[in-house]
Amino acid sequence: MPDQNGWSRYLHFEAAWVLVLTGILYLAYALFSGHLWRNLFPTHDQRSLRACVTCIAQHLGGARSGAVELHTYNVLQRSTYLIVISFLFPLIIWTGLAMSPAVTTAFPFVSSLLGGRQSARTIHLFVTIALVLFLIVHVTMVVCSGFRPRMRAMITGKAKLTETELTTQELP
Image (cartoon, rainbow, N blue to C red):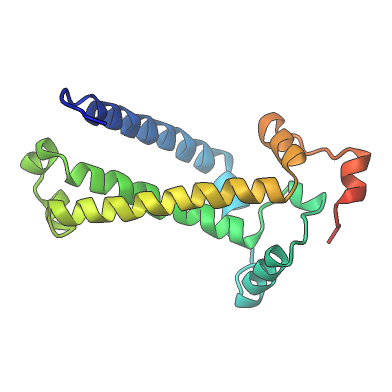
């Protein structure tokens, strides 16, 4: 799509600010409410290769999550969310800033630490691909693990299963 007036660059910049501001709000909430430590860091039992392999095998085997798992994250979810929150989002913001002429003129180290503007552009692309893959896998897993109870829990904050959902799901 032709873009002679540069509106897509401005829209991209505006979307970046939405990402930054919502990220700051989420991080503040996660830190002050204890959500980060309580729900996102893997528990002591989950910090093993065996726990990861077991979780992957359950997902690949098609086992559906039970009622207990509506209230907590498994080791794959916790690890993936931490990677996205603490690595991918900061990296996409950093590489975006490193491509900005205004930022690199004032702070040349922003892009030089990444190897220059072209390297920042390449890293930005790969991080974008990783985030899109995360989104696709995330939505697919929500659909596969029981769309209605998961969406109800995400929207209302309450995880309740009806009798039919309880009987159709395999409990761990």
